[in-house]
Image (cartoon, rainbow, N blue to C red; front, top):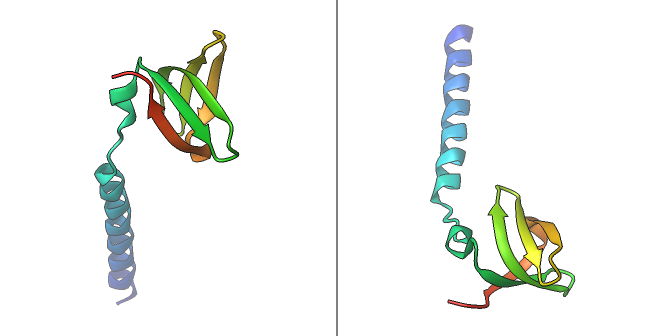
Length: 86
């Protein structure tokens, strides 16, 4: 009986993991459409950064600012992203 319960628990845990993965897939990533374009980023502290979006990863974005400096920004600190050109 115990083996059956353990097997059921493992199956439930796997289902939860799959649901989480499925949920992550449902989240639409819009940043690829801004890749290579000029943007302005407003951070949660009110600071604004303008530049070109160079790269995107799961938790970070890489931006080249107007002075030519490359900045890596954690997505958790971004409040708003404005495209500067279409």
